[in-house]
Length: 174
Image (cartoon, helix red, strand yellow):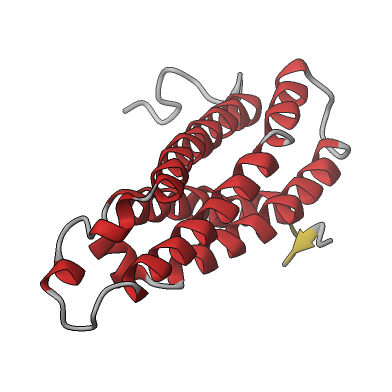
C-alpha cells in the first residue's frame, strides 16, 4: 500500500477520492433503488463507482495507519482512526446493494416488452416484487449510513489535524 505520493502522506491525498466516491456511490445507489429511470440511466456505473470506492477504502485506511504511526499520538488521532476503521463495512454494503439493485432492476426490465409504456413508467410493475422492495430499503439504509460515517470520519480527522493549529484572529493584521 502506498505511504507517500510525491513526498506527501498518501492518506491526505487518497482521502479526497474516498470523500467524493463513497457518498457518490451512496447517492447513485439510493437513486437507483427508488427510481428505476435513474437506475436505467446509471446502468452498470452505479456498482462500478461503488466498487472503486470499496477498493479505495482499505488503501486509504492503510495509508492512514501509516500516517498515524508518524504523527504525535493523541486522543483525537486515535478517535479518527477508530472511526475510519468502521467505513469498510458501509462501503462493502453499498457495493453489494448497488450490484443487487442493478441486477434486480435488469431482471424487472427484462420482464417487460422493449417498447412497453410500463418500461418507461416511474415504477414498473416488476420492480414492486418483495425482493426489489427489500433491496431498495436496505440500499437506502446502508447508503445513508455510509454518508453519515464519511461525515463523522472527516469531521474527526479535521479536528485531529487542525486542533490548536490555527488562530481565531488574523496573524496578518487583517
